[in-house]
Each structure stands twice: as structure tokens, then as C-alpha cells.
Image 1: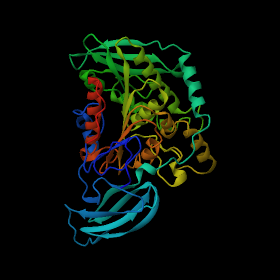
Image 2: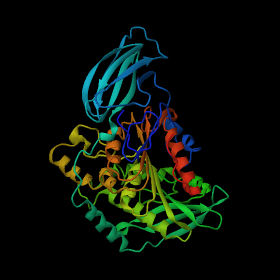
Image 3: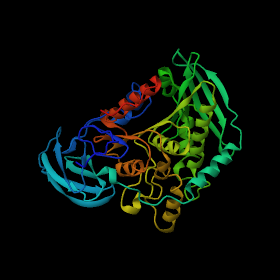
Image 4: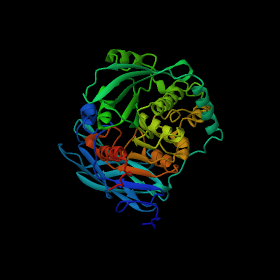
Length: 459
């Protein structure tokens, strides 16, 4: 264990990451949400059943120093193993570059992996059992505090976004609030529409406690897909005591029937992440990012804002927007990003998997170069150096959508206090309640903010 600087707060056996608090768990929790109690109900269809093929890494926290060896164990149960004596494994650096492959004995066997430099590995084990293919994943990190960026920050990055914010601010907000029935009697509910970037609209839901006073603001930004907004998503934290604004990622009404969103997803918004991907002035995320920025501005201009606390939170694509906002909006005081997307879009240049949407990852030649160049202006990696507020981030070590390597390389660029919640058993959807530790930490942060207390240290 390296010597730990006096300004670093860690848990037992935590790696020393400057300005960071490490929280590590061997098993974990629910998928998403500002509220702990509804996450599983909202996403139970995504959780799935336990794998028949189980892969585990020797260290429960999945963390090692560079040069150390990680031992992986494989077990299989719940199946007729007659004629099955081994499984195939592949070890991928950064979730992408194959560095080893082989076979491992069943029903119980082991194999090892190591990196001599900071990074992560993702191991995949497959076996054919009867007529069924079974698959298991595990991950490990090596000297995580040393994982760095894959490409330099654009010299004009800050100027580009300053110009876009200036253009945004030149047009009025024109907020329109439409009161509606609340699902919780102690809260007031409103649909909100605002004028956005270049003639677009921002759609969301504003929910606040039904009492006089000024409240800390919570901006919720949405994960990927095309869908409406459930009233509970904003109502539950408003019931805790927040002034909550939950905004859609798209210029769409928030309360249409599912058929409407299905038609949008299969029609004009099909593969929306690729819209304008080779032109930074037309990139789909430009409007999305500036919509979140304006939403935050609106919250801080309301008379019922407490004048200090502006918290941003989201999962996946919402985590992407959370990190972006923490690095772009000067009034953000805390940010909580669950398995954030959009981290290290140029990771492919150093052999790492890129975080969703990974727009250039599967392209070739000149097209890849153009898309990579544009992606730099929307990559969390390049907003991170401007982040000075406290940042809470979860990392799934078997997340194939938002790989661990990109999240660590991004958050390692930040300047403020940060807390990693490392989830050794979590994929992107948080199967088997594997993201619960992050949900618990988010709740603890919200409670501290509501009570005006310092953010609680990791346990």
C-alpha cells in the first residue's frame, strides 16, 4: 500500500487517490433513481436472474496495484455438467484489447491476470452446457488512481462552450408552468416548458414541497432512450425537501402514451446519438447539454431556491450530463453520477473500450478521425478538469456499456473532492441489486445537503 497523503480520506484497504474517498463493495444494489424505494420496481425487467456461470476475483474490492496478480475463480451450478470439463476465457485490457485467452476447468477452476501499468481488465468466461451457452464476467483494476486520459483536451474547448452559452443566454427562457395533480400530497407538481437552444424546447417536471420556504435545488438528467417522465422520479426527492427539476433529454412532451415514444425512437430519433456526430455544431448532444445548462439556470433564478445548493444527478446518459454540468455550470455545488456514460470517447486510441455512445469505436479511417475529433467536445473527460465541486461516481467493474477504465480516467482529471463507489459485481443495469451501495450513498449525500451538514465520508 502506498503512503496515503493526509488530505485523502479512505476506507480500510482503499487505494490512495488524491482528493478522493474510495468506497468498495463485494456485492451491490439497484439500478437507478433518486429514490431508493422505486428503483427496482421501475427496472425489474432489466435485472434478470443469476448467472449459471459465476466468475469472481480474489480481492473482494476487485482492486490491485500495478504488477500484482489477480486470481479469478470460475464455478458453475444449476446445470447438468455431464460431458462439460472446461470453459473458455478471454482477458481484455480496458474491456477491449485482448491480452490473454485460454481454458479453465469446471465445475471449479482458476486463472490469473495482471497489468504492469494502471488500468482495468475485463474477463469473459463462456461454456457450452447441453444446448445452452452460459457466460460470466468479472473485472479487476490496477493502480486505478493512475489511469489517465487517452487524448489531449482541445485547446479551444472552453472557448467553444463559452460561445455556446453566450448564444443560449441571448434568447429568453420563457418558462411556462402547467400545474397538475401530484402523486404525493405534500408536494406541488408542474409540467415545465422552456425555450432552449436555437429554437428548440426544453420539457420537464418541476416538483417542490407544498410549504413556504427556500429549498436546495436538485436537477435530474435522464438516461438513454426515448420515453416520458414518471412523476415519481421527481416527486420522491421533492418529498424529502428538494426543489426538483427533472428534464427530458429530448425536445418531446413528457407525458404521451408509450406508442408515441416508440414511434419517435423508431423514426426521427432512431440512433439519435449518431445525429450530427461529425459536426460539433450539429451534434445531438449540443442541444441536450445546453438544455440541462438552461434548466440549472432556471432553478437558480427561482425565488424558492435556497441560494446555495444546486445538485445534479443522473445515471448512464444522465451521469454523462451530470459530469458535464459539474464542469460547465459555475453554480453546481455537488454532483452524483451513477455508472456515467460519455467517458473517454477516444479510449480506442490506447486500446480501451469507449464509454457509450462510443460513436467512433467501430468506425475506420477518415470517418473515425472526424467523429473522434467532434466527440472530444462532448466527452466527459474534457469537462472533468473544470470540476471543483464534490463528485460522487459509481463504477461497475463488469459494465460493458460504460467501462470502468473510462470512468476512472475521466474522474481522475477532476480538481475537487471525489468519492468513487466501486461496484465489483455490477454490470450497467445493476443486476442482482448490485448498485445498491451507490443508491445508499446518494441518499446519504442528499440527506446531508438537506440538513446543511458536511457530506458524509464513505464507510
